[in-house]
Image 1 (cartoon, rainbow, N blue to C red):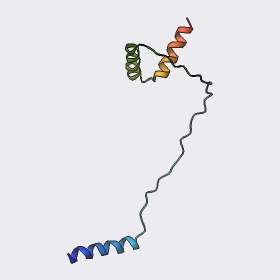
Image 2: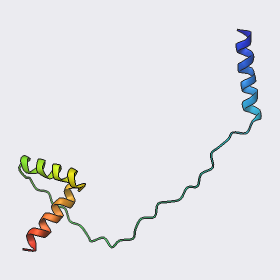
Image 3: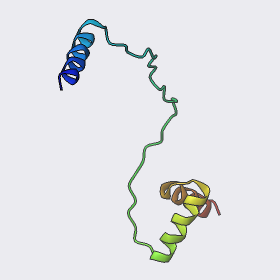
Image 4: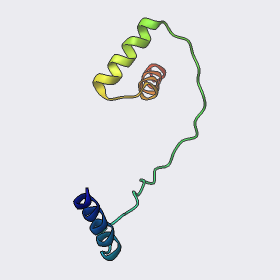
Length: 80
């Protein structure tokens, strides 16, 4: 038991004497690309569940959000 206490005592002394070693790393802020963002409006619609499932599956496969899919579909439909 005395050996254990002496080890702990030595550890406390060591911590007091030694300066903590901190890693040196450079922190640089992430620069957002300046893009002209169009003003947006809100659209809230109810669609069949099967269609929503298809949209989500397509979004996962193509790495697109539901918003992006909706915008692409509406643009394609309205450009007819």
